[in-house]
Amino acid sequence: MIFCAAKGIITIMKSSGITLAGIEMQNPVMVASGTFGWGKEYANFTDINKLGALVTKTITLKSKEGNPPPRTCETPAGMLNTIGLQNPGVEKFLEEAGTFLRQLEIPVIINIAGESVEEYAELARRLDKETFVKGIEINVSCPNVKHGGMLFGVDPEAVAQITRAVKKATSAPVLVKLTPNVTDIAAIAKAAEGAGADAITAINTVLGMAFDVNTGKPKLSMGVGGLSGPAIRPIAVRCVWQIAQAVKIPVVGVGGIMTADDAKEFFLAGAKAVQIGTANFVDTEAAVKIAKMF
Image 1 (cartoon, rainbow, N blue to C red):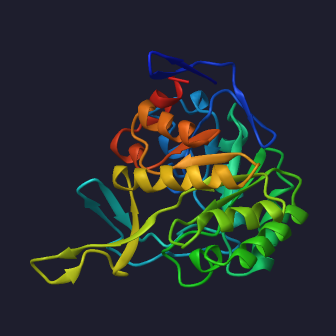
Image 2 (cartoon, rainbow, N blue to C red; image 1 turned 135 degrees about the vertical axis):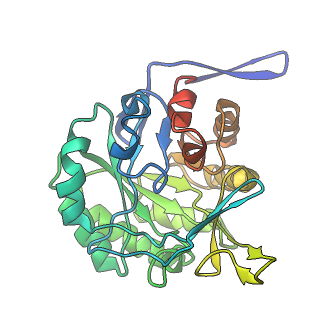
């Protein structure tokens, strides 16, 4: 990927691919965890193999039912969600999705979450046995769970402890996905880098809330949820810019990218790759369309 400036206009010329923290990718565009299932759900609607990489929905050690409905609602420039990391657990995940993921021609990055340092490490250890797993993305930033998630992500030392444990348990590159709901996201990124992280993913959703004015009740079952979509893009770009100046490892930008021009903002802010999230709900081919531009 090459940046060119002419008469004040920034353009991006296509390249033959990139290497992100040791992961070979044909382009710098991935899908964001939690917005693309395990990939199989989108296989009939778009050519997944045109992406740079696929990042799975978050997997935990044991199954999680997630939060009660209603779990999503639209906002003027995005959506709120409080899914709560619903998933069948790592063993069932490998049984149900493993065959499909092994057949993909692009790298697969598994997003993981736990309620303790030990759970993160055990997940990484289990996934390290799978040759199709080309990377691990640590979720220390989900705002919709009572244990773990963002509770870890707001504490630099907790992020460092989890990162060190996961790095010790896997030979795969490790990305750490950060929450924007902190005072100094660069400090959290530096803690992850110091603990051995190979890349930083920024950002996860922003805490938000919406009420139904007819009932007087929150629109989400848990009240507060994660805001995503175009509304958070300026926040995400700012976070990527701050992180890119603070660390030497690659930064993956995510947050409200709907078009190739949106992605370019993140590259200009210092990102080496991007992830497409909420746009996948609007257009099942959004990520592939953006990937084709790079």
